[in-house]
Structures are given as C-alpha cells and as structure tokens.
Length: 478
Image (cartoon, rainbow, N blue to C red; front, top):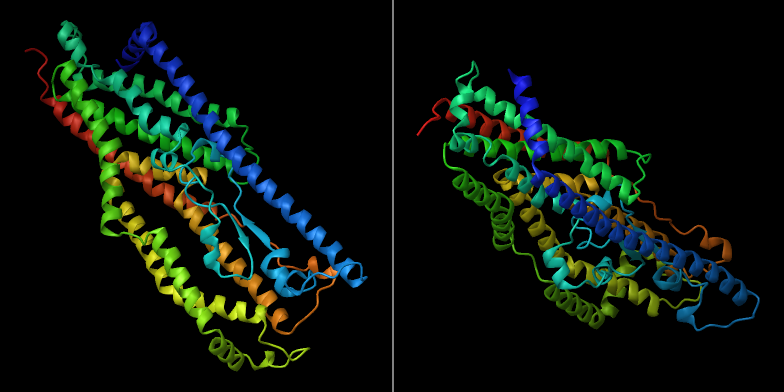
C-alpha cells in the first residue's frame, strides 16, 4: 500500500502552487547566499594574492638594495641597512603566513570573518600578531553574514515544517482520514508514506542546494578532499532535514488541530534554532569570560615598558645564558637590535600568563559548547557545516599553531645572525624560511563531523519512535 500513498501525495504536492512559490523563493535565497559567500572568499583570495605580491616585490627590491650597498651606490642608515639581519628579520624581509580558503568556503562563511587568516611574521614578539587583524564593522560581526549555511540552518527547517505541519490533521479536519483508514491500511503506514514523500522531495533539495552552491561559487572539486567534503555536507543537510521531519511527525501524532500544530512547530523552531544556541553561547561566555582585547593590549604595553626599563639587566642575563654571542665582529653588543630582541623576549614571558588564560578560557568555552551541542540540532549542524567548509574554529586553531611554529623557526634563523653581526648577501634572501600551509587531515574533519551526524540521527530516531508510539493512540474521530 505504500506505493499508492507515495504517488497520491506526490500528485497533491505537485498541484500545490505554494510549493512552487516556496521553491522559487528558496532558489533565490540560495543564489543570494552563495553570492555573499563567494564575494567573501574572493575578498580573502584577493587579500592573500596582494600579500604574496607585496612579499615577492619587497624581497626582490631587497636583493637589489643589498647589491647597491655592496657596490657603493647606496649608503642607508644602520637601522634600514638591507644587509642587516636585524632589519631583514624585523621588517625588510618578513614573510606572510596565510591560510587559503577551502573549495567549499563559499558555502559557509562561519567564523572566517572573526579570525585573522594571515599574519606578517617577523622577529618581533608573537604578540604583534594580535595587531594584524582586519578592521571589521562590529554590526557585521554580531549579526554574521548571509550564506548558504544560513539558508540551511534557518530557512530549510521552515520549508519542511510548512510542508508537514498538517499532513495528518488536515485529513482529519476534512473528514477524509476516517475514509482512508477504512481501507486495509494502518495509520502508521499512511503517516510514513506522507513523511517519506516529503522527505524525498526535501532530501532532493538537500542535494541540490550544495550542488548549486558549488556550481555558482566555482569551487574546484578536483582539489584534494573536496569531493568528500561535499558528500559530508550533503549528509549533514539530509540528517538535519530528517530531524525536522521527525519533529513534525511527533507533533502531528499528538492529535491537535492544524493551527495548533503550526504554533507548536514554530515554537520548537524558535527554541532549537534561535534560543538554545543563544543560551549555550551566552552561557559559555558568562561562565568562561576571556580577557578583553583592551586588557590584553594594556598588559602588553605595561610588559613592554617594564622590559624597556630593565633592558641593561635583561641584556646581561641573556649574554650570560648565551656566551657564544659575547664576542662580536665589532665588539659592540649593546645596540638597538640586540636590546630589541631581549626586550621582546622579556615582554613575551611577562605576557605568557595572560595569553595562557586567554587560550584556557577559549578552550573552556568551546568545550562547554561541544558538551551541550546535542541540546540543539542547529548547533550540531552549524558546527559540522563550518568544519566541512573549513571556516570553523578547529581549522583556525590549526593555522595558529602552524603560524606560531613558523614564527619560532623565523626567529631561530635570524637571532643568531643578528647577535653575530653577520652581513647578508643577495643570495641569502632566497634562503630565508618560507611559509607553507599544511591542511589539517581529512580524518580529523571526518571524526568531528561524524559526532554531529550521529547526534542528528539519534535525535531523529528518538522523535520518530515517539511519533510511532503516539500514533497507536491517535483518535481518528472527535
């Protein structure tokens, strides 16, 4: 009896003009969301291209400047001498550490407008990274950006609920439910057929949405892992849709009227999609507040002033720990470059407790959100979609770790040369440490996404099971 139910439901849905209107509106919203996401990715890519071009031009100019000084055609001051390792490591020869967007980044902007995606790495303190953020309008950061993930998380459930809020109650109110059940068919079979028809239709949308997004954004699916990420995205969207069908089935099985079903489902959408994520996010910030940016900058300034006041003692202590630097080519160690290095290291040490507290609080916030994410399917889906698109917090933490490691390698290359008063030649520029971004493993993304998928599936099964039990007590008449 299932096949006739599917055919009949499909005819009814196809004849409903509202469905065509909703589909057209959804297509417009998808196109607009992908356009916004693609525009942001283009902005990021252009910024990274500009940084790479600036770096290449600056290093080429540095080679020419070194050759001019060697030939006597130029005589720059000591602090701007291109042959100086201090000037090269601090400003003239610096490199950009950058994180390129993934092929699916246009589908979910996620937190890519909150976290910096490139740093200028120098011999200065790593605290200088905090001053390289893009200046962004605070209203944009608060409200987020409209993208395909927003359509999936907020509007996709409304389409499902609009199709399903009265799939049983409407027949009961029109009197056709009793007639239909007078045939050799069980109510659960009828309900399952109605849900399955709608689920197949919406699941098709769940496949079409990211596929259209990929086509509109021009994503390169030939890139390593891009195809698997797209399949994961589709799986999350379908599982998210299944949950909302399960909720609609549970509410329909309660036996209320169609208006009551609509109000109940609207309330559940508001609870799961808006209120619960806001409460979890607000609770995480309240229970584990991070130091403010103003506090961090003030602490950095205080530590810098204290280190500058003690620079003679710091220099003496540094040379005592590094006796290999006590003899230089010209015998003068207490100059601007060496004092700058030791004061920067002292500032970093003084700031370490503040940075550790900042990182600890961020980790605690993320742990709390991860712990309570199963209270809301929207949190589960959003975390998974951002992770798949490469715009989630985990990828940015991975980038930060790589940038910190590169910064340390950069300093280890230049500081000994500064202390020994080496003089750079044009070929040395090509030997400077080079930045390479290593993408986090796809297995890590799969592991995190699997947890969210499992949560969505478990919640769906529980709701469907509750609906099956409630349908056994459903009153067809009265």
